[in-house]
Every structure is written in C-alpha cells, then in structure tokens.
Image 1 (spheres, rainbow, N blue to C red):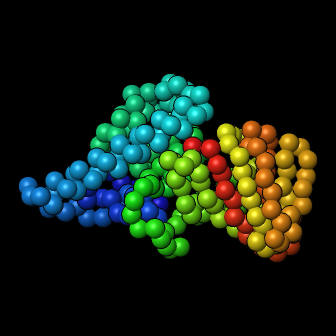
Image 2 (tube, rainbow, N blue to C red):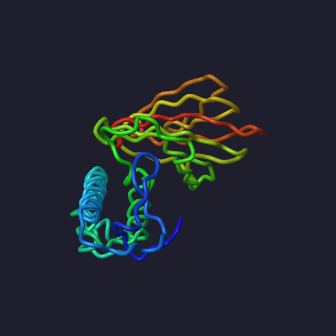
Image 3 (tube, helix red, strand yellow):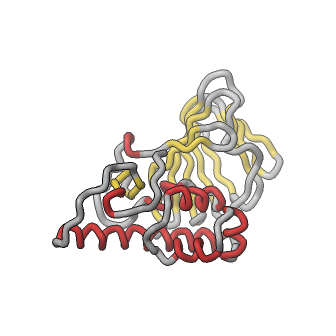
Amino acid sequence: MHSVDAISPSSVTKIGGGFMAADVQPLVKSVDSKSTTADDSLSEVLLSVGQRVRHYRRLHNLTLQDLAAATGLSASMISTVERGQTGISVSTIHAIAQALDVSITALFQASGPGDPVIKHEDQRCDITSGGACRTLAITDPDMRLEFYVYDFAPGTASASAPTTHHGVEYGINLSGHLSVEIDGQEFSLAPGDAVQYSTQVRHLMKNVGDTPAKAVWLNVSRL
C-alpha cells in the first residue's frame, strides 16, 4: 500500500466499489465547479468512513479511549476520524482498521446505488494472521454483511488462533480440504461442503491438505 501524508481530493481513486488513497502528484487547484464537486465527494467519503469506524467501535463495546490505546493514537484523533474530518493519513485509518479487526477496504467501500459489478482486479487481498489470502468481494453495511473469498495455501488458516465476534457465518468450500474448528470441535469440509455457525463461539478455518484450497465465506450482522 502506498503511503501518503493525508487524504485529499487529489489523492483519492476508486477501487472495489469504494475509495482508497493513492500516491499521486497533486493537481493544480482552481476555484471552479469541478474542484467543488471533488471536495464535496471527498467529504462524503470521509464521513462514510467515520460512520463505519464508529459503528465497528461500538460493536466491539470500545470507548474512544479504548480504541486510542489499541492503535497508539489519541482519542481526539479517533474522534476526528469518526467525524469525517480531512487531513487524516492512510496509516491512521489502517491502524484503526487493524485494531477493529476489519479490512481497510471495508471502511472505504461504498454502498448503495452505483455500478453493480465489482471487478476482480479491483478487489484487495489481505493476508490474515494465519497466512491465508482473504479477499473482500462485497460489503454492504446497510444489509450488515461481508462476502469474502479465501485462498488457503497448505498449512495456512483464517487467523493465528480461533476468534470470536458478532454475527453468523456461512461458508462453502470450493476446492481442497478445509478443517473448521467451532467451539473446540473440528469439522472436515471436502469440496462442495458447506457450514454455518454463530461467530460468538471461537472458530477457525485452516487448510489441512497438501494442495491449495479456496472457499467463499459470508459474514452476516458483523457490521
């Protein structure tokens, strides 16, 4: 990911149905309708990001001070992000996303009307703490769902240890052999097998075979 000092109208590009900051040369600003539109669009994006950060923070029952301690940022900075103010660095939002256990793409991805197709090349793969590639294909905060595609190399997992969070998960193993641990019990998934469980119990997916595995996973009511 490129590093920038702050998010500005000239450093925002569309990706995966939402927006991500990119390291680009600043544009010469002029006072016209186009720059006004860009400023308005940026404000909408930052406000949307701030609302999602607040949503996730409250979901985890965290105060501003709690999230500040988890990120190393100040409580006033967290508040600034939640209020959608400009001048926020991408590294700041990335630190918040990590502390909230969400993809940074999920914070930037837009919802609502627009292009219904999210191109594969615009989707981002995040490497989990267990070494698996987790691609957020679709997120819809209004419907409270996240749709992921997992690519598991042999020996990799969805996390370094079983985790819990709000919601329910539904998964389908497309290829390879997966083991799903749910509340301490192991379940084997062959290609085509599906699974569902409450995520309020400890759970973990891992590739126990000698070949790569691919699966799709739907998180509902986590947002």
